[in-house]
Image (tube, rainbow, N blue to C red; front, top):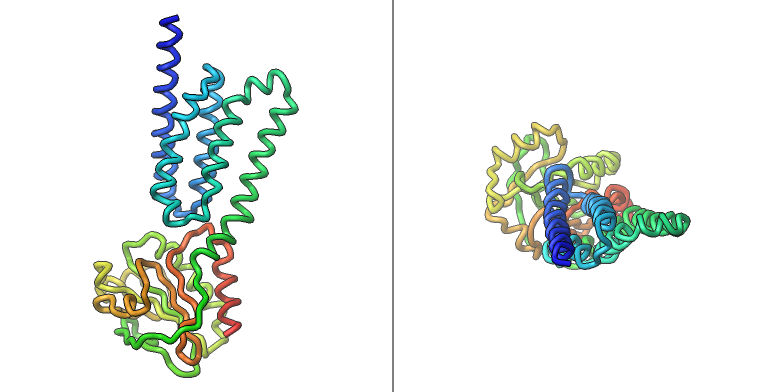
Length: 289
């Protein structure tokens, strides 16, 4: 009996350790590969499911399963869910992956068809979440459509080409506040450049990419950084972050769209590669102004 108890607690300790390791792998992949929140979900679901199968093979202990899941669930709730609450289904689908993994071998031996149904259900739910739910909900949570007067502002041109440094009557202005040390900003760059290319025939739509010394950038560093990535966008500098603050924005990337009358029609804070409709939605919105 004592040996069984020791073995059970060894399994629980192993489950907690695997849970912490899973946490490191999931967030390490998101940090170094892409900021796509779908990667966070999928990698977490796969690792938790496989680890739960191992726990179920050793001993179908639900407390060990809880210890496996808690590190990832707790960190996700604290680090991500507070900023992006629309990702709450992670807190249902990850425990579901653990529960199905824990009973998978037992169910497969007794009722193979039920085991297939459980795994198929998890796959269907995960596919819906990643393909249909996340892109749409991210767009809704990050974009703020409005119709408000714009503050007075003026930017410092950085690139040699013509740079829109303030709103001009009769022209739409797209301002993207940026930092060379911001991973989501860098991930957004090709998408923004593609939007400008899509609208290259619309001469009344202007774009400007704006950095600031509040992000530890200088005009020279900013210009060199963009040139190395072969991004063709007009560049400007926002000394002291005054323009950024005047629009009531927090953090970067932050997007502002001004219409032909100089009114703010859309603000947006943040970018994630999981928002697969970013380019299409932005082009369609600009065409409606």
